[in-house]
Length: 261
Image (cartoon, rainbow, N blue to C red; front, side):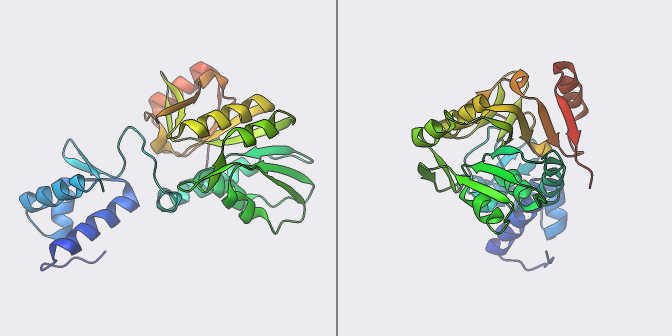
């Protein structure tokens, strides 16, 4: 980002949103210093952007996403926490074993796992995500089963009873599940009720449920509950996870994997 004393309001707004895409939250004072304008000007900019539903203001800072997770386009989500998601994906890929039959749900952290899968043995992969199918489509050692149903445009994945019915007749070793929120009182959540129902069917048919979530997901809730925390076997996240969350996960007896850079 380039500092400029004579930035127009539109240029400042673009610069603020670019900064938020990189860091998800930023202090008002830091924005004023970065853009070389007064606090009054920055606050006016943030008020306009909040009214346009492009950010949220909270206690002297701007944040990209409401603490109550909202449904965002997958292309926007791909720009957030890219390094953390890539590392989580690599750790998750290490859990895949010879001749596994696995389910990959949907979401950008699951996409990172798909990019990391390079099997030298046979693997059967079931997925709701069109993106995942495309990412692994050139791997000859992977038998891909693309679930059918109604397409969610925002996530580029399918939902609905047709997909759920297919899962009634299969048994899988592992489910790799992306979520929009992890709240220790409420459970794991997503923003879409239909996706939550499909995720529940995926959990029912899988021996082990592995949640892939960057550290920003802790303490947040999506609209629809998928499951309680004690239904989860493993959580893979990044080093930004709060220590309080680490302690709660240990209390629940869930295996925690913190992805290394």
